[in-house]
Length: 124
Image (cartoon, rainbow, N blue to C red):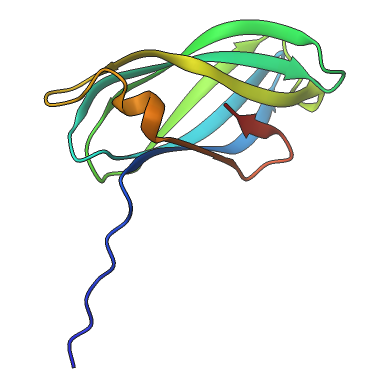
C-alpha cells in the first residue's frame, strides 16, 4: 500500500529560535521558511522590540533577504545596546517589503505564521 506524503499548507513561517547576548549586543537568530509556492526575492519585516515591562524599546526593520521556496533559512539580527534578558516580546508590526515573481502584494502578510522557541514571545 502506497503512503502519500502530506503536503505542508502554504505559508510563510518565521520562528524566533534563540537569543544570545554578545557583549552589548543581543543577537536574535530566526528560522524562516517560505511555502508560498514562489521564491521570495526579498522579505523585510517591520519589527517592534518590547521590554519585559511592556515598553517599546525600538522600531526596526529585519531584512530576511531572499527566501527560496521550500528551503529553510536562518537569519541573525544584532541589536546593539540591548540586553536579551530585558526583551519580553518581538512584535512583527507588518511587512515592509515582499517581492517575488507571481506574488500578490499581500501574499506575505496573509501567509505569515509566527512562533518562538525562546521565552520571548514572537507575535504579529
